[in-house]
Length: 229
Image (cartoon, rainbow, N blue to C red; front, side, top):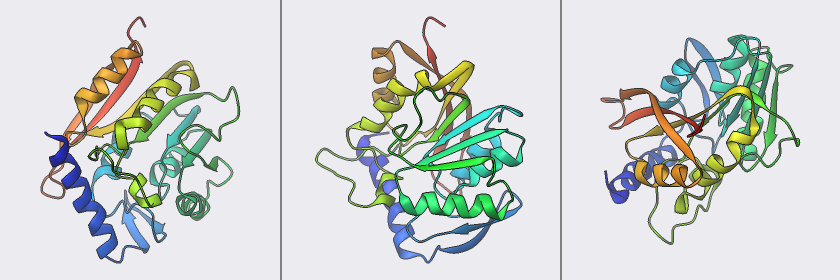
């Protein structure tokens, strides 16, 4: 798929967020969730449910979610038995929303939520058994900038955030830890592959599912690992 097609599909979903009243409560994965204004809406696309169902949460271990949004995946990790969960988001509204849902489901004591651009707010030396990011895989055209927090949930200009995730993610893994990326066929897979190869990393496809009719994309769960591992 071309960059233009991927951006157009991402832009369409972004516009749907602006057009539809999505704040309030919604049901997903058999639970009720709160959704704040300006936060990515998991009820408008099956992407959050799909990835959350696929993730191999390390029961008794630690889980880090980058880009937590409303907190569905991070809270689900705690409910699944993860002993320590960290959730990061560049949006202050998303941070508050995740804290709200952690409290709603009784796991606030196990879910630490930080306002962070990727890994920036994590303490030095903090590592995890599983790291996951449902990324902003729609690649915008040259010259595009994210002007709102919500746009950060959809678009990655120059794939700079993806490159940082590849560069910094492996160093945040505990021994035998796993680094996963939620992606799709509207993302720039070749650009991602090139960036991974430049850092001595490989991408393995773990899961794939056509999201139609709810979403005209193929969701992909990728694992990132060192080529010499």
